[in-house]
Length: 249
Ligand code: HPA
Image (cartoon, rainbow, N blue to C red; front, side):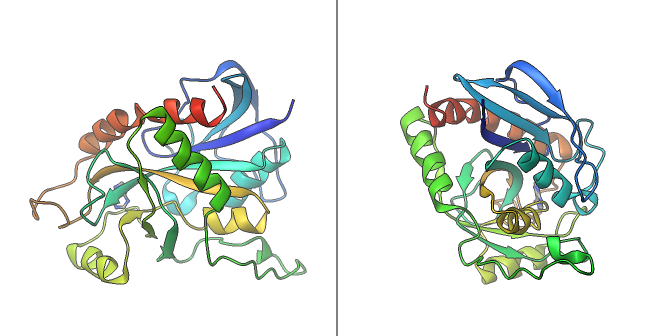
């Protein structure tokens, strides 16, 4: 039985409570080992794979994640569609804490990461089309499922991927707002680009954990990990319903 969907979990999402009959795989790949075991189980009668992007104990910072190995491992077990859960900060008015969003654009501010399959000498150079960085059909499925499941979700938005692991300055966020970013996170790239190079369908379901620096009503608010985790836990409530509806419950 093929794998209908792979889910990559971000900060605060280290398991999919939904998975019944879990089987574990940890394939090696030409790029090395993935962040941790891939758990495969059933959701609404379909096989779903889950991988914790930062490792199950959140041991990997965003710039140390082996994005190539994670995606190649998912592909090697037969997954063709990847739903990426990304914990983010909100920049513009519609993207406050606990909002779920399915962005349609991104800007890459990361640097120094292994960001392509064409890294090693002798590999073919790929210039994949990336005008629309997320697979539109998968985005539509997520947005439609949320609507049918009655889970509020913002359709669209621009994700700015920063290097981290520190959070941003107010001036950095002000610049990102001028650039057109609605959301800020540290793991959206190079993941989306590598997924495109691997020919995988890929879309992001962003979970807003906090107002980005200086972006909220209290411009001097200090962002704490506890607030981030509390808001992710609350917003995650709707995610299993979106998944079940998407998979055809
Ligand atoms: N900035 C970058 N990444 C994040 C944030 C943020 O404010 N919140 C959660 N991930």
